[in-house]
Amino acid sequence: MVSIKNVLVITNPAAGHHNPSSIARFVRHLRHAGLHPTVVPTRYRGHATILARDAAAGGCYSHIVAAGGDGTIAEVAAGLAGTSAILGILPLGSANVLAHELRIPFDPARNAELIRGGHAATLWPGTLHTPAGSHLFVQMASIGFDAHIVHTTSTRLKARIGRAAYAVSTLSSLARYRLTAFTVMIDDVPYRATTVIVSKGSLYAGKYRLTRHSAHQHNRFSVILFDMSDRMTLARTILSLFLGRIERQKGTRTVTATTVHVPAAALPIQSDGDAKGSSPVHLALSPSPLRVAMPPLTARAG
Ligand SMILES: Nc1ncnc2c1ncn2[C@@H]1O[C@H](COP(=O)(O)OP(=O)(O)OP(=O)(O)O)[C@@H](O)[C@H]1O
Image (cartoon, rainbow, N blue to C red; front, side, top):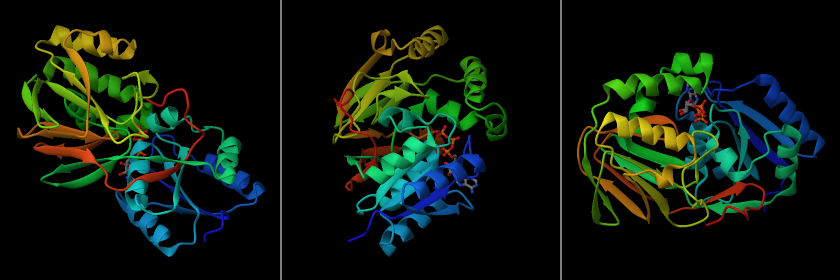
C-alpha cells in the first residue's frame, strides 16, 4: 500500500504559464502539508508520459502532478490511466480548460491541501487514433476549423501573448480556411459537418460554455457538430461560442456518443490544444479510467 507521502511533480518548461517560482511555492506548501515532493522537468514532447508511466510502475508515489496545461495533463494521464496513482494538476498552461472544469484550485496552498486531503474522482478520458498514431485526451479533440486554428497558431506568438495568439490565428483563418463538408459517423450513424468538437467537458478555450453538462465522469462524449456553409455563418458561430450561446446557434447541434469516426482524409485534427496530424480519425473512450485529485463535482455532473 502506497502512503500518501510521496508526490512526483512533472513540470513542462514549454507550458504557457510555466513559472519556476510558482512551482517552488507549490512544493513548499506540499512540504508544509507533510508530503514529500520530488520535481522532474520534461525534456521533450511526450517525455511526461514516460516519466509518469515509470513513476506509477515503481509504486512509490501516491500522486503524480502534471504542472502545465491540458497538453501536459494529457501526456501524464497517458502514463497513469489504469494504474492506482492519482493525477494531480498544477495549472500552468495557457488555457487550463480541464483545471477550470474540475475546479482545481489555482492557489498553490489550496492545491497542496487538496492533494494532502487525498480526495480523488474517476474520470474517463478519450482516445484518438489516426494513421500517424494514438493519443489519449482529457478535455476535447476536434476536426476541421477549430483544429486548423491550433495547427496555425504560432508557438512563438503563444509564448509571447498567451491565448491571444489563438485570436490572431482565428481572424486570419476566417478569410482563408476552406470550409469543407465531410461525413462523421457518430455511433455508426452518419452526420454531415464542416467542423466537429468531441468533448469530455462542458467548457471551451478557458471558461467559455460549450455544452450544458460535463461527461468527465461518464462513459460518453458530447459531440458538437457545426455545419457552417459560408464565412458569415462561421464568424457568427465563433461569436456565439464566446458569448456562451453556441447551443442556440443555427447549424449547430450536440449529440452524445461513445465513438466518432471521420473517414475523409486530410482534415486537420487537434486534441487538448495540440496539433495531432490529419484524418482519417477514430475517437473512442479510453478502456482504462483515470483517478484525479479534485474537489467533489456536484453542480456540473451530467
Ligand atoms: N520539454 C519540452 N519541450 C518542448 N515541448 C514540450 C516539453 N514538454 C512538453 N512539451 C509539449 O508542450 C505542449 C504544450 O503544453 P501544454 O498544453 O501543457 O501548455 P499550453 O499549451 O500552454 O496549455 P493549454 O493546453 O492549457 O493551453 C505539450 O503538448 C507537450 O507535448
